[in-house]
Image (cartoon, rainbow over all chains, first blue to last red; front, side, top):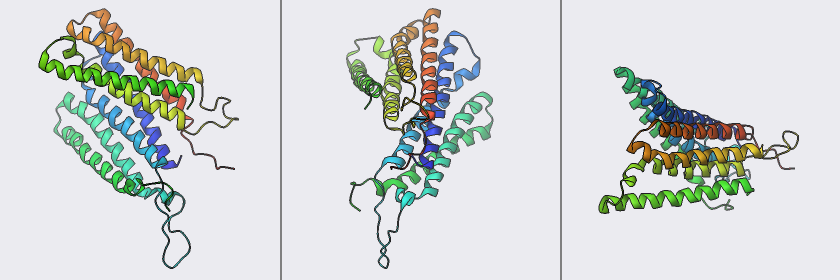
Length: 155
Length: 146
């Protein structure tokens, strides 16, 4: 498993644990009142499990296992243009996907409940900006992986 | 596919079918209005899909395909079997408990139902932590083929 995928998968496992703990706190709150915050973390719980855990795990495993890009030969050289990790696509773009996705999840998970608790305007803006980060992450991932959705064994 | 992974995947398939059956009944109920229970099962049905189906499938497949431990690291190539079974049991007990109890809790919140809901949450959180523990060491580079 390449470093890039390992970062995605490890982050996704951390979100699974955090999201499940938040879910447990929400259920415990029905029996033992834990205060206002326990009722405000529903968005964080959903965001961490659906985007942080499931989506991020899928992206990491897809980067690891999807068919590699075609080798492609330069007209003037017998050497393959792409080798090794480069056959997975652009690694910097994949790291950008990682940063955007996690910035998006963390901004939403932290600032949505903080805004509900405090009603401080900038928190709402930060929570809203998370959507742009997630959009950028999705766009970067699809652009990077598009060419790898192909038949195996053809170059 | 090892037996534990097969159990995860088969359980995930069952939740997939069950969740869609319940969803179909919920849709019919809007029209025929035949059960109060179906109006209260929305959240549990969502959890059957997201936890029982998607998360359980992801856990089962990860347990199956992630790089295995080297023999000198751990004699069990996929980590502790006991922990893997423990995660499976906690996840499914927690999920089923929630599914069975939540509609009744929503009809009339009583403290013993709240205790069972708490237990279901704790079981699922334990399953998540157990999976983290089980898989963390296997998120590693593959060794080069000899």
